[in-house]
Image (cartoon, rainbow, N blue to C red; front, top):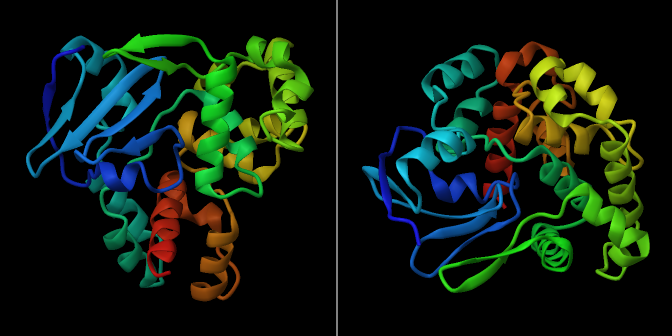
Length: 274
């Protein structure tokens, strides 16, 4: 097992909020307070105290993978100032306070696309269960700390499973959408190119060519894995928030380059009131 790396914990960073705000589905918090999950084909174990973040990795792995993944290189003081300047409704202040510590993860695009296809008409526990089942059945197994873990399956692995194989895991109508996503990747859909060379609007158009992928799934994929922090997914919670606090209309185009981070604050805030 890797040594534990101790990293200074910056302001506006909270693992509990990061992994419990609906952007990732492969992490669980253990009784020891440690979050554990699989990303990039590796096991990440992460915990925190007031001063430090503790990660089971080397300094080299941190600099190559986890610093970027956890958004630790982003300036959330500047991000929050920009967001606050664009709202004339005080609800954003309460939302930013409630959601303080959320950071947008930079996840693997293929896994994120599939996870949000699975999320359609689903709750978080069931999404996690379905993602785990797909990984266990079709992902590559690897050992860590005497336990077996599974990477997220490749597009080729899902195509090999076929629609019926995925339906056997109780994915339902989503099986056809997962196969369509895999076919698009096989036939030339370049998710890395969307991240590096496409605007949010161009990325949205490209992802929505996939069967079953609409604006919400595409926006979540763009926000949580492809670096498009101006993406603003609208789900039931955000629609409720817009109706409740903004008179049913919110000009997302005026929210600037961090509209998606504002969305996460609003999403977390409204859920916290329930």
